[in-house]
Length: 567
Image 1 (cartoon, rainbow, N blue to C red):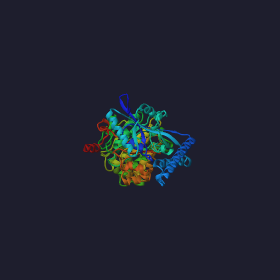
Image 2 (cartoon, rainbow, N blue to C red):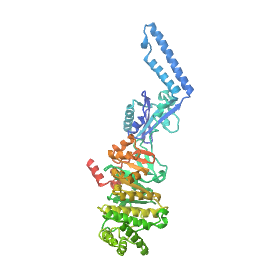
Image 3 (tube, helix red, strand yellow):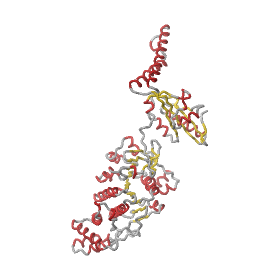
Image 4 (cartoon, rainbow, N blue to C red):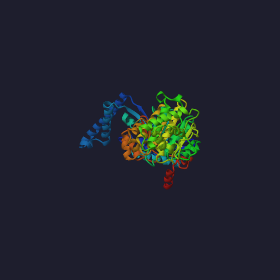
C-alpha cells in the first residue's frame, strides 16, 4: 500500500498533506540538502477565472448562511458576540475573503495542485530512513509529507514528466493554490552552468541544485582567458589539476598544453601523461635557446618585427638582472641583436653568439655591458645560451623553475613567456594553445614584469590561445593596475577560499553579492567556492575520493600531510 519495487530498488512517493499558512521558498533547498537522489514534481492545473470567483462566492455565501443560522439559534439561547459563530465558520469566511482579494485585486490565478517527492533505496530499511529524512526536512517548514496509500502506481505516473496528474483520483491528494503559492516552489532563482558543447569540461556540482557544471571556455565565452584564485590551503592546486589541466589534456588531444610550474607541482602529471618536462636551472640537461624566433609567416602586421621584439626582450631581461641599464646600453643591445641574426643565417644563433658580437663593438659601453652580462651568456648562469634540445611541439610541455632563485627566476620567467609567445604564433590556425601560469604573483613583482606579462596575456588571446593564471596572492595581483585589468578582462574566474581583505578587493572588480561571498569566505570544504563564467556565477564542489589514483596523482605534499593528520 505505501511502496513499490522498481527493478531491484525499493521506492515510494510522498505528497504534502498539510501546508502551513505561508510556505516559503526554502522547502526544495531543504530537500536537496538531504544528500540523496530525489525526484520532485509540482502539478498545478489552473481553474477558469470565472469558475474560481464563482466557487469562492459560493463558498462565501454558504458560510455566511451558516453563520446567520448560528447567530439566530444563539440569540434564542441568549448568546451574543463572537460566541454566536463557530471558529471554523469564521476561519472559512476570512479565507474566502482573502482568496477573493487575491483573484480580483492581485491578478492571482487559482490552481488545483499537488507537490510530490519520489525516493528510491536499495533496501526497505534504507527506504524508511530516507522517508524519515524527507519528512524531517518538511517539518522545518511546517509541512507534513505523507505516503500515497494504495495509489503508488498513480503517484509513479504522476512523477513522469508528461504533465498529467494521475493522483487527482481522490480530492484529498489535491490542494487549491494561488499563483504565488506555486511560484515560491519553482526554483527559478537558481542558476546553473551547463554547456551544450560536446567538448565541454566537467567542473563539479552546483552546491545549490546539485546539478553538474560543464563549460567549454573556448566556445561558450567571449574571452576564454581566466584566473584561479584561492588562499593558501584552499585546494587551488588540486582544483587546477583535476578540473583544468588533466581534463584539458584528455578532452583536447589535438591542442597544446603548456604549464609554467615555479614550484614543481606538475611533474607527476607530466610523467603520467608522457609530457615534455623542461627543468630550467644551472647545469640542467634540458635547454631553451633564448634567441629562437617565431615563424614570421604567422605573425600579425603589428608583430611583424620579431627581431626588434627579441631585442626588447633582451633589454627587459638585462633590466631585471643588472643594477643599471642605460640608454646607451639599449642602443647597443638593439644593434647587436640585429647583427646577430644578419650574420648567422645557417642556424639559430645563441646568446653566446650574441655575446661574441657584442665584444666586437668599439664602444666602451659595449665592453662594459659584455662584462656585466658574461655570467648569463658564457658563465655559470648561461641557462638560455644553448641551442634548444627539447621537443617544443609535444602535446604537453611543463616548465619546472623550482631550482631557480634570486635574479634568475624573473629572468627565466620572461624567457619562458617569450618561448610561449613563439609557440602561440606558430600554432595559430592549426591548434589551440592552452597555457597555465601557476604562482602568477611572481609575474607582478616589478613594473617591468607586470607590463611584460599582461602584454603577453593580451597578445596570446588575439592569436587564439587560452591563458589561465593561478595565484594565492590576490593582493599582489590587485595592487597593480595591470593585475586589475587582467582580472577584469577574464570571463572565466574560479574563486576558492579568500581572506576578508582580499574579498573586499575582489568585490571592487567582480560583482559579488553577500549571498555569493559566503561561499568563499566560509566554504563548506577545501576545494569548493565559486565559478564565474561570463555573466553566470555558481557555487561549486568537486570532491575527489582519497583512495583513488587521481587523488594520489594530484595531491600536493602539503595536502597529503593535512589529510593524514586529519585521519
